[in-house]
Image 1: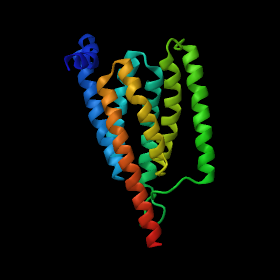
Image 2: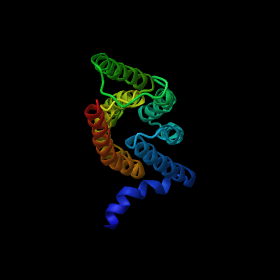
Image 3: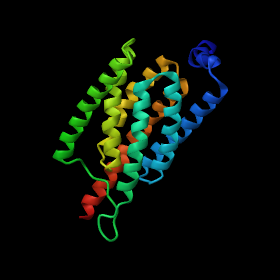
Amino acid sequence: MNQIIDYLFEQYQSYETKNIVLEIIAVIFGFLSVWYSKNNKIWVFPTGMISTSIFVYLLLKWGLLGDMMINGYYFIMSIYGWYIWTRKVDATHVTPISRTTKKEKIQSVYIFCATLLFVFVIYNYFDKWTSWTAYVDTFTTAIFFVGMWLMAKRKIENWIYWIIGDIISVPLYLYKGFAFTSFQYLIFIFIAISGYLAWKKYLNKQLQTL
């Protein structure tokens, strides 16, 4: 048991206390953000912005450019999502939960491919192809970019992208030595599955009402 604990947390012995506290705070607000998203609450965005802004700072210090770009993008898309979720589509209703259209599916593919190309260029420029994790980072960055875009548009398919990305991120962050963040993604998997089921139930209820 002690060996497991040492493996998970020994890397924190060399970290500044301030950075450990910041990571824990970011993880807590990350949990809150995903939980509010699962429950279709607008608080997903302010809590998410707090979490991502902290992670941008930490990941920049740790030299994890792909992860930093993901969180920077999250912050920007949170502003966009906040607007979309509160925008009135008529006199009494805001943007509802819905499924992606054919056009949005095509746009998702474009965003995924564009993100892969963008991260590839950035990693080449900063000479970050030093580990196999860089290639996984590129893939997860593209997945999360699409997921965040779909969440901002209140599309149920966003949860599928989160689930896939979270599953990959758990061992990835553990390998990188960020146990708290790895644990965060582990919990995210279960919340994302729950979120998908909750949104699907909402859509089915809307169809029955119609």
